[in-house]
Image (cartoon, rainbow, N blue to C red):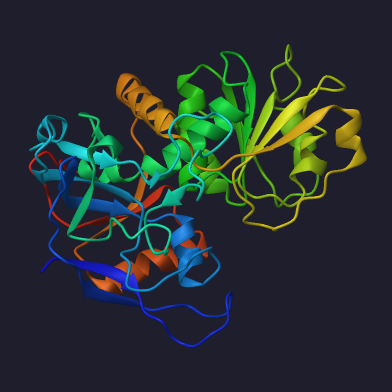
Amino acid sequence: MPSAIAIKQVPGKPGQVYYPLEKISIPTPKPSDNQAVISITAAALNHRDLFIRQHLYPGTSFGIPLLADGVGVVTSTGSSPEAKKWLGKRVILNPGTGWKDAPEGPEHPKGYQIMGGTKMNPLGTLADVVCIDVGELEEAPSHLSDEESAAFPLTGLTAWRALFTKSGNAKPGHNILITGIGGGVALMALMFAVAQGCSVFVTSGNEEKIQKAKQLGAAGGVNYKEAGWEKKLQGLLPPDRKWVDAIVDGAGGDVVQKGSRLLKASAGGIISVYGMTISPSMPFLMGAVLKNIEVRGSTMGSRKEFSDMVDFVQKKKLKPIVSRVVYGLDIEAIDGLFDDMKKASQFGKLVVVLDKGPESSKL
């Protein structure tokens, strides 16, 4: 039988518990008419997977394969002509279902159902095989290895919506600030914005990560641990555009207070927030009101946005950053990737290679 990695239930309160990993057997899938069976070659971690192990994510469940990012080869399909077209292709999986193309949010009454580790969706990519409707598949970009292909579905989709849909400022010559560079979403947002012709600035608590971001095209960066970092960043902005048009943020905390000093005076600006890793609350101050600043929550994205994002990656030949790779359904090795995430030591994505598929290449 095929195998997968899931979390094992042990006593503990949410936020205090850390569920151990366990290897489980999953049924050999039999595809229905419009489904495909994908032999997974690589899968990647996201912060939600760490939250699931800490029981800090809605719907956390046991016995369900972890992870939402995956690439693999279609090994069998259902009987429909549409499904049969996918046989033998190397594909990436849309990380969730229930959201077709509505710009405001998921159309499904149960909301967006992300793969990996919750009762909302029984599928997960940290498994030998996944059986899914072919409407959720995209061909893996031909210029990417399996490791790279697994590294961008969820983070790429999240970054795409936060930058393009929600900020509305991904335009040539615009100044975009991306906070907390080093994580998967922030790095994808950086790549997208640079490829779109924006001037991109970053923050990090690690100087090495700022320098790496500059190598990827960032115009400059500052250490947010330094007092008055926002003034230092303002000094880096081009003389003819001494303001930030939009902030793409995954930290929360004091981003409104600090960001309002950087966004254009009295003429508004957008803070597009896709996460709150520093604090679950974010004060909205009167100063932001007086400057007409908007804070827009952004999470994941629609099936249409996923398709648009993958097409952009293919056309621009973008390469997601992979921080570290381990091989096989090896619990000790995978635990090491989770340790990287807990310490925030990674720069890019943490990837598990299950099988070196025929199209895979070395990084």
